[in-house]
Length: 243
Image (cartoon, rainbow, N blue to C red; front, side):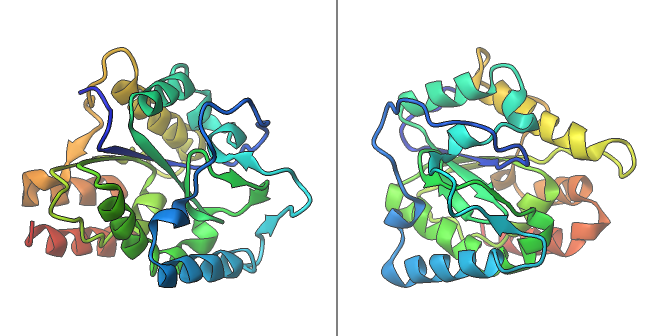
């Protein structure tokens, strides 16, 4: 399953942000460039709101670095992760990063160093990101979507009304029981799932499932996200009835 033109990979940000600017293969992009004007304004205002939440911070004096180069946390440390994503991009695939502070950014979008956990801002982003992602996918004429994230990030991307042009939606949402090292293990498992997809094998492994396969997949989602996100899984069940 070689990723290329018409494919969109969605991955999480990370707590580690120690990357530096590197020579770019492409001109910088911008997530908002694919959105209608009213959503561009909503995105800007929601980012401001997110960074006003207690415990979040953005360093306005830090250099702007392309998002994929900035993040250095656990998913990005998995061998083959960065190389595989860059190879997929060179083959024509698109890549978005889900961020607790920025919402959604393109892989090549210049952003500043910040700290904002999705657990702090999920209630804000859950209200606006589904529509923004829908518009982005429609504008970019995406045909296949691959999302590899933890359950908190997945909950924020629920209720997307995928355009009819989207033929496949694949998810990897690893789950580790609370108290068993989830904060380290889950991000690493996300990275490993991505490598399955963009590495030498280029196929979704056992951790991936396709939501457009029917209602049974909604039950699978409910199992991986756990009771805390049962309401999100219920939303997916309702959404799948119309697919």
